[in-house]
Image: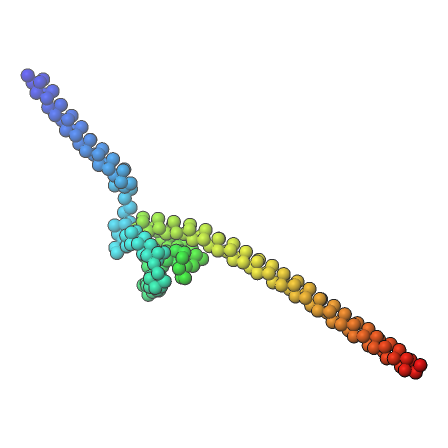
Length: 208
């Protein structure tokens, strides 16, 4: 009888342990599927008071890329003022992201690179979302800067070629004009000689 009670108690304990294990496993699976882990949660995010969510940055960048010129100018001016008046990791990151976004007059890939590198040098002051945004846009800004430099080089090369072609054309025109002037002078001399001969012949006929 005692053995039966012990067996039942052991089974209850084992069932309880199994249930707890399953619950923990479900929670871990949920964290895994959602892409988070309690052990991997950045402790720095909790201490960054007032840091914007990544969605706020993305929403503003979407408005900047798709907005009309007035909206783009307003976003650029606000981000620039925030970076200049209250410089900090978040305000500098916001302005750097605006600079790195192509399609508006204030876009500046070179300056964006510099600012994003400075921001990423102090990752302890950023959330994981901000670090991801800064890294992605830094890579994009670097590639854009290379493309812009290549385009500028090609434009300069094309301009030099056009200038050389124009200079060669002007030189040929000058040569043709000089040849025309020489031919006109020779024609004038020949006409004078012809007139002189004609005058002599007329004089001879008159004498006869």
